[in-house]
Amino acid sequence: MSGLLALLDDVAGIAKVAAASVDDVIGQATKAGSKAAGAVIDDAAVTPKYLTGFDAKRELPIIWKIARGSIINKLVFLLPVGLALSAFAPFMIPPLLMLGGAYLCFEGAEKVFHALGFGHEHSAPDGTHAVGDKEHLEEQRVAGAIKTDFILSAEIMTIALAAIPESTFWMEAATLATVAVMITFAVYGSVALIVKADDVGLFLAKNAPTPIGRGLGRGLVKAMPYVMKTLSIVGTAAMLWVGGSILVHGAHQIGWHAPEEIIHGIAHAYGGSGFGEWAIKALLDGILGVVIGTFLIPVGTKVVGPLWGRVFG
Image (cartoon, rainbow, N blue to C red; front, side, top):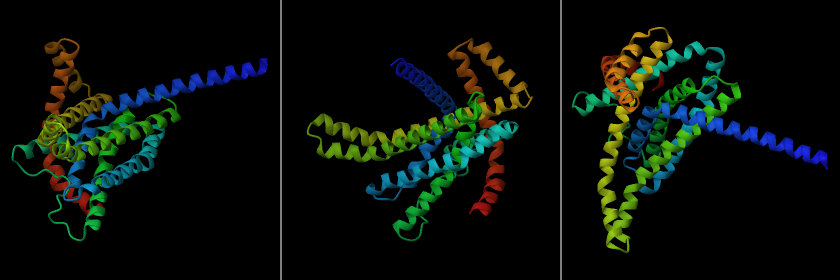
């Protein structure tokens, strides 16, 4: 009997350790995932464009196909690469992170210039030049969305990897895998809600049994274009802020401390401490993101974009 009690006590101890490890993984994954806010919001804002022109009954299946491809991108391709870099070439993480930050700045600045009427923003296809039947078009759209997701997922996983405190191999693997699942669920769950909100609004407007319900449905339909616009603006701002912040922090990590010290000094001098300091720092990071992104626009559109198209199609 005493042996059984000792065994149960050991099992309880192991369960406590396992529960604590799970809590650590979820906590680290949440913190790491929050660092990738810019890419996450942009992913959620861009994906609905791939559904333009399809019947409502095909929207959720298409979102599921893209989400499945996103999970494969993160877990099958990017997770092993990230773990290999962390184990064998950690010195490569800051430069890769800065490359991702530069891409966020480029994307954000391009969206700003597009909103101001300059140039054109590269985005999901609108279907006006598509050929073939709907099934073939759906396959093309899904493939294009998964390719775009791969770039954004690479940014997300690199940012998350850099945000994870130094730990064991298995803890890092579990944390990155949790980030991948959590972010994919958040992004494509949000996309599904956004895409189907119009249908829900139309259903309520026509079939709700009360005037309040029908009015709510009409309000939902009218509000969705503004929700999408707001999401796009917030995503652009987050991209510029996160991109600028990554570049400043990366420069500090590789030995160039001046940008971080200057921004921190200005933020502390004019914002005091707490939220004021954070807000000014975020603003300065965002302004830096716009400046850097502006210089990168011709490089991205004239050099990197065409080269990428020739290599990957």
